Image (cartoon, rainbow, N blue to C red; front, top):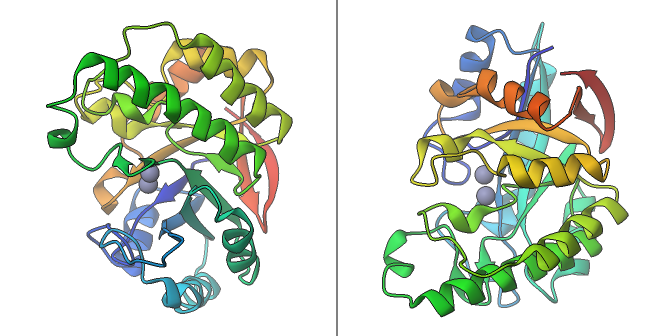
Length: 264
Ligand SMILES: [Zn+2]
Ligand SMILES: [Zn+2]
């Protein structure tokens, strides 16, 4: 079974419509396609240009539902990628619960006001100490996000490596706290294959972290984080190898916020 969740359309920062993504998925023989456009709920409700407008979540879900109802031979799964922002947990959950979503990808893109994956120009001037600090706080945010049980799948686990800036201190205690919280909340993680095409030059997360996740029994999905149809299954063969290397033999699929195991 070939499934690809965590993909973006023009509703947020993708380059294609839902219909174009569906067409691409059918061409590539997907059994299930998940669309998960960004939904970023700041305390001041400010709009960011890479998120869908906050008041259009209902319209977005309606277009997905309508498209899904007219499909034959492939399932379209309704999702969002929701940002974790401290203090917004309950409001976010209640906004999401109003809609018949199949899955929610949850992400940390901000450490306080620092945009982790927006542009390398934010990282370039940082002294190494600050880089270490951002990484440390990033892991604590992931821990808190998991504890708040906002979503079903924790996205791109080691995202701060995107532009190649790595910590030079041992953060294994913070990583372990994040992974333990994910396990305790019974959430899944993803192999996000986009990292292989970026300066990180490896998938999110690294094999080392993936092994730690496997040891804890944290379930897995393989995601492309595609922003165009051409990338819907990018590096999926490599991702399956990586998953096997870490000891996985099953993946997950989602329907109405419930998960089902499929063989890797
Ligand atoms: Zn993301
Ligand atoms: Zn994404």
